[in-house]
Length: 168
Image (tube, rainbow, N blue to C red; front, side, top):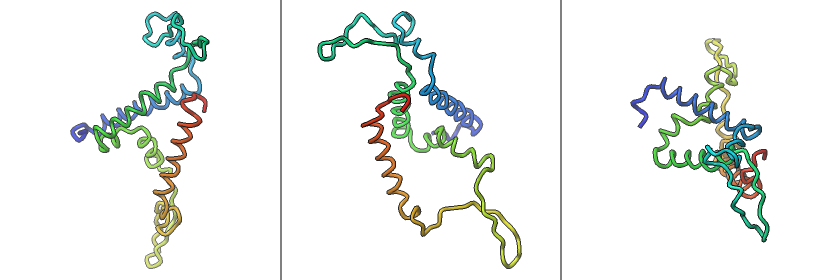
């Protein structure tokens, strides 16, 4: 689907998505601006709170206070959109625009990779090669199980304990 688009344009899209992603992560920790969107006095915002409606919980009205929208945007817009893109538009589309994939390539681009010096015993030539996981190591044998276990723990932690709390 993105085969006709030049790599330079995709690179710009990746940079834009990465900067937006970083801005969203920063907003989870410090966000003085988006609380103004939920202010009841902000008549232009579609996200403003309506303090005239009372939400009853155990017979008492909950006090509605303005809140930062970073966590709501992340969990209700970004995560479902990325899943939608992956399932509907495909892996190729996601692989070319994914901000995390783009960020993970920065060490390779800036040549910060961990390399090991090898000397050829016959020729005496010195060459550097990337350090890789040994094929018979525990990590190589169990990487799928480890990934699934970490995914499962992270997902359960998010659903049971964190549940879109900005700081956590």
